[in-house]
Length: 586
Image 1 (cartoon, rainbow, N blue to C red):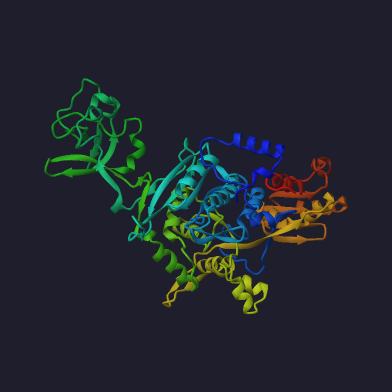
Image 2: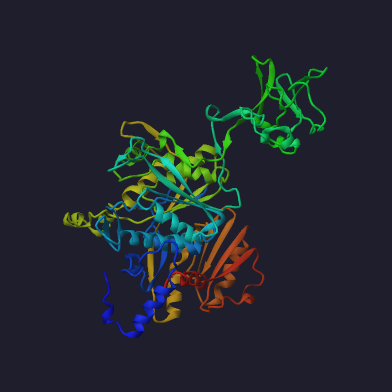
């Protein structure tokens, strides 16, 4: 790996010195000058597009959002999504390889083990490239969640801070294996989840607890303390009566005059109403937890309790929605029971180290509990747990959240063994992760399945489309390249608009419809057929997205499209090429 600098000329040495001097002096530094990853080699002189795998589509007769599964290298999938979903993703949840040294991931087609002295640099480089693309996909208040263990925790934290300097990076500890994995000095019983989110806006939903786990406490401030901060004089606007009658709160009085001092915390009126003041057992005037101008916001949290020992009524606050803590523990986070065994139960196939369904669900719920129509992306989809979790959340509250899952079709080193058996290339691919695990799991949790014990599990419902990445090779003739990529980009346009059902197809154009949304794609340079397309579109109600082919990098001549009703006009393929110029050299 070391270079022989004695063989370099003066100019090359000066370049190296200049590069070294320009490097940052603080933060995460890693070696980026190693061999290219395989995905970079695959994309040399080519650009990725999507092709739908017909026959894999799952359609729910009840309608609902369309979920997406993309088979291919996640860098290529993220490149496509930078065109289709830039600024549209509400949550990115990923569970990348943990780089334990146990040959659990590949870099440049080779498994990385603990003897690889560059394994940490390779891992950081691997993650950096993908996170930079993923960053562009988040909405303004979108959240990235990335799970990890102790092996790369520090490096990942620094990397996230570098890539997202305008966001807060919060580390949550998740106890997922109570018995622990034995190490030389400690038994590791937890993993971590980094939440990357806006720090000036409430984007993490409150944790909704059951009655048994709610935070129940007296509404009087500092009921068990005696510092000045809890006393009336430190906040006069928090001293006012709460009116109760027949054990019910019926209203709130105005802030009491500073010179008014009730004789008791309970003051009875002639009509049976009781005024409750924040006065403790020692007749010390304290405060309510909320000021008069905001207490009505939590009216539903408050209740009345009669204290028989004191012979007095008290105000109690029961708080079910609570800010998430940074340490999570739940028996259902156990990865063996609710990960490994669950996957085995669903598809009768082993898969190494799947996440607990409930741990993934908990992470996503923390963001989308009150975002019922959000879009969730996982570009390390593995066994498909994220998709399963999103479907469970929709079942729980009737939401219409959708997911996009990206995974390669990794064969886990069994290629040679499968070829020795005489299997064809297509048959070999059926043993890959996406085709053997991810898709079958999604199909079964959507449509229902029978467990190994013979128990029937009802399907969660949902729609799914299955895509693969493929490449359009560059050409010396730029116009020829534009023509070819235009012919191959249809599925990308459908994904961008969320419109998939084809209603008309000719040699020059195609029309798609989804509900009240319409997509038209015009492939020809010959504008003679435009009039026919215009007639077809004018027959259809709704908003229409129209993508029209042109070789002109400056776009379309808008004068050709006067009189087109409810149509938004976009030129192709230049819009796609503009995005890819930021990612690839071609």
